[in-house]
Amino acid sequence: MTDESNLILYQTDGAVARITLNRPEKRNALNDALIAGLTSALDHAKDDGAIRAIVITGAGSDFCSGADLASLQKISGASVADNVDDARSLMELFILIRQVTVPVVAAVRGRALAGGCGLASACDIVLASATARFGYPEVKIGFVPAMVMAILRRNISEKRAFELLTCGAEISAEEAKAFGLVNQVFSEDDFEAKVSAYAGQFEKVSRSAVALTKQLLYQVDGMNFDESLKTGADVNVIARLTKDCQKGVASFLKKE
Image 1 (spheres, helix red, strand yellow):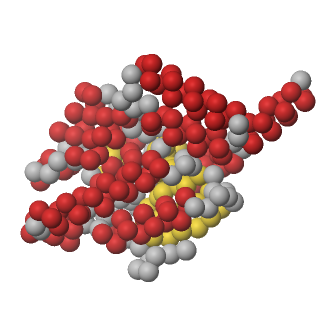
Image 2 (cartoon, rainbow, N blue to C red; image 1 turned 30 degrees about the horizontal axis):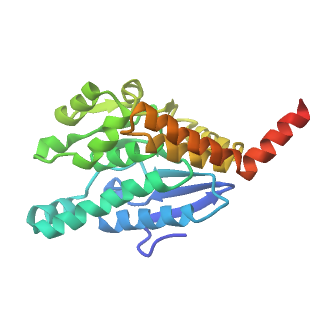
Image 3 (tube, one colour; image 1 turned 90 degrees about the vertical axis):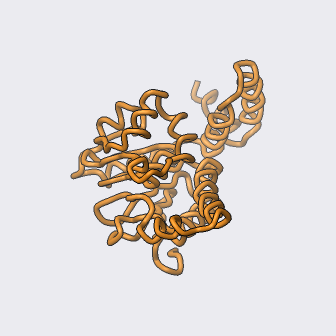
């Protein structure tokens, strides 16, 4: 599957859907068409019951360099209404990543900057090559990484988030891992193999259990302790009634 302008490549490898940002000549910079294509690809994967994980990556040497020059020029001359529409399209993409029931994995090679760093951090898991670079340079041009803040603040500490968002500096993959922005760092030489193996592990666990876990993990944000426990109890009951749980328990008891 590809979108009309070929900006998004979609392929499946077993139960893993691989979505590739395909603007290597522009360092996979974000524009309206790329965001729309990525949203469409995620919707496609979301509706495929055979998919257990989604990997988002970039063609060429970089993951995503943020908004392209044409988009920045459009912002500078756009009306308030146009800017609202533009911001909402990216907001809806970030929300969709949370709503997709399977894990969404960012596989980052090269640079993930500004909106590209936001896209990576919006994913459930971030895997980085040893040479990857991350950063939010928006403040250098008077812009605010505003929507990303809601995600970043949930990923890392307040002081680390403040540092990243206001200094505008790039950090290495190892620094990003130390910050809590990256889950795993793999060597450049075997990066693709390591990403495939990592995503493939979701084929070995219960799809329904992972889906319920993802939903609950993000749902408890903002809840107090009692509310979190009550919601967890409800999900516990739902999990017990799934086919996966009933089969899993029966299999375990049989072995015992």
